[in-house]
Image (tube, one colour):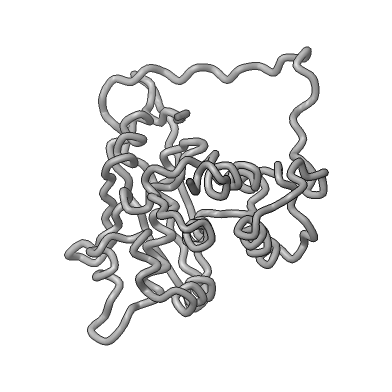
Length: 254
């Protein structure tokens, strides 16, 4: 796991990795209508869900604010190729009403690796969107200065170019379950008419942090497998080929 240290070097100023996220209220309402409140138990702890309830009903704006806060807090950790540990980043309401962030489990380990002692967050929302901004609380211990950035190697050739969406698929046949997964992605990205089996779904933003939870739910339905969010590796869902190998191959089902 790669992290970017954020603690300041001894005797000088360092930098802080701010995190920001915005959540569409309409998108969350659609998920609620499609799957019900239980869907969000994959993302929020029971205490967090309780904070989102008034005496009469679920406060959707409050729910959206917590989702945005979790994503913003995660962005301060600067980790690559790691699934957002939704329930390890806990956003609760203080007695004064402002949000408090508690890092647990995997999220706490990522923070420690990055020299972060904690995260503070602020949330705002309107009718259509909720936004959150998070900042790390730096570990006051004596850190090592960050390594200087590597200079580009002229002999290394040109930079990597993202794979075209319409590249030739390496998989000639596709299981029914995998085809349903592909159709689900295409329905949410009307600008595409096909998805190559080796296309990076993460880098090309076909799956983002919010749709990721819905995507896992879809995989469970069509593969017949229970998926643990805490142990799922990003590379297992990075491409349709990887999804076929990990969730729809005969060896997996056996």
